[in-house]
Length: 298
Image 1 (cartoon, helix red, strand yellow):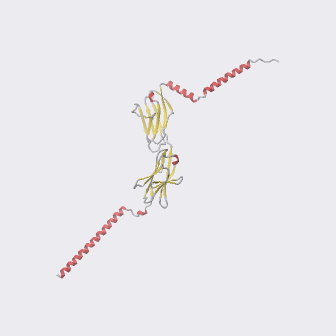
Image 2: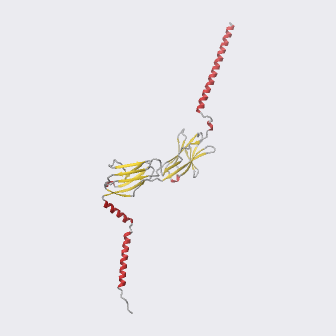
Image 3: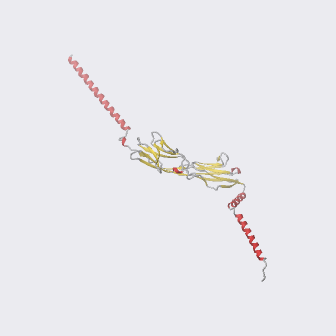
């Protein structure tokens, strides 16, 4: 009986030892699995990654006067460092992070959470804003990337005289260009006086615009007297340009208008001719007076 109890005790001890070994192996494999999963999430030597700039961003920005300019700076592996924007000409700190450090409220910092992009926004660009700006990261030593902002005065230009005389029944053909308009594409519109020129107002109107070439062509067929007026071309972020179109009745009227224009261009011509004629008359009178004067005999 005693022998049977002893054998049962040995069996129980053996099972307990086996169970403990099994649990230890299970915990070991679980810890290995957890370490493997973490290694897939966290790269090796993560602390050793240094911030670096994405050099693919546009670093020469052209902005038209009065528009909004945006300078995009992308920084990878930023960590806990801060990104600042600095104006190079006076080394003035404009922004740190999303905070602005200038009294000029036209300068703003923009950043989307969890993104690597830090934007300097300049509202209502002025000529004095042109220059070099630095995107700086607070590493030791600091690293920075320079951006050049260029401010242009863009103006649409109609390739015609300021006043045009078009015979009634013929066509108006106007071409407008805006070569300095910022951006790869430019939207252009035509107005007559204060109204947008469109084919819905009358038939025979055609507007052909090339946004990439920054040109626009306005054609109005078989013009009438009511088509007279001020025609304006406007382009995105550019000053507009205008010409005045006169619709005339005949070619003789056009010739008369041209002659009047020539006279207006030389307003001193008639007084000059009148002066020459008067001088000639006085000279003749003086000559006749000397011819009739009596001679004295000694």
